[in-house]
Image (cartoon, rainbow, N blue to C red):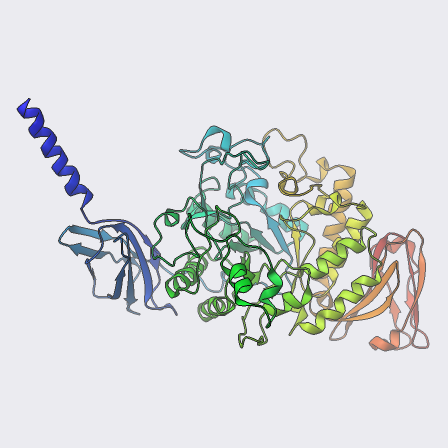
Length: 625
């Protein structure tokens, strides 16, 4: 009995001592580069009993300074200055106090080839959005990672994981090359919680298959693969001439992130898990210089939902952490662009500082922000190139043009007249350079065109052709090229047919596409090909030539090249007189149709007395050159 009591006392003493020991469990970022524009790098070290600890570098090429530890002793911040002469390798730090000693692992990477990576996105590109989990299952072994409950992987549940992964994207890079796109945007690949959310709401049971609830900003989602596979994807894409865009999320993390219940600082988030305000989505207050601060702070500080802790970029440690994280992913993977989720909900000064940090290290780097607004003025307020009433130029390379997208959907489903396209484009006067906007056919948050009221295949084809020929940088959504259907989330995120075991047909192959799928695919491919062949479509000036309820005709001109785009959604062919002199076409010029109903119109078409007459078939678009 005495021996047992003594054992319990010893065991208890050991347990108490262990609980009070200094430990290190994680460092962010885990690596960096010498000769980087951001130096020193600010490390965030997670552990226990870090209060009062001394931190020192173990190699002379690095120097530690400005150590800061949170009140609970669970996080330590430290600057690490890296000598320009430091070679790639391990540069661990030592953390020591009266409670013990621990090592912080840290590595200096070899830089990637700057000529082959970090290429940026230009108006010559066509972007293709892929929701990784819904594109193709190339590696069934990662469908249910360790610890993931069986119900989290279920193709019959539209909110569960379906198995798409990096290997599936790699397997179909040749398909993307054949289609003609030049850049792929992948939804977030940060590690997300592997569990399954249960509740009494229609959206349960659900998972975070989409990637927007990060639990680790420096880890790869294990359903998708690992860092080596991600690097292979980028390398193989680049070898085929395809660029890669990462979906980043600075605005919020997931509620399963370790920070949620143990934040590095008390003001790391806007509020806490137990006490926070929910977003009321009064987004227009961000634009108005007359808005009251209570509404502004709710829009910037409110949580999208109770399981999305909102990051506080007004805390400089948060802003520094997130800028470093964006830089790390670019440097570690070689990506060419960033899509920044929910960008209007972070402070405008943070957008500016993030862009400055990216451009300083990677001059060609490009970032597009999600300002999901149908108001062109709101879109214009956030794009870079001009100073807002608040004195800030966000430097943001691009916004998505949701306002033009919204009008195009309505026009090509017969809810607005064709002239509405021209009416919307007049708001290009608000932008420093409207060519920098990113136009879109649809995305993973919106109904697919073919599931809109009034949708027809001809309407979808016209919508796609318009977005590929109007000013800006076009973005397609995976499946739009085969006229996929899909209503509101999650129905708009159906699996790409042929990407998964047991699929009834394979739309990656022309021989297995349905008649409708092949018709839409060929149309999309042809207009992308036309865009690549004619710089006027990517860089040229846009001039309105004719517009009424059913027809819209405009020109795109670059240097000596002129293309005329004629859209007729009506049921009858129409003859349109065009003021050729207004766009500098001299008499004697002869125009030929190069795509879209070309077999139905006369060839060639002369310019006489400053005019030309175009015959435009019904329910189609024609490009004249």
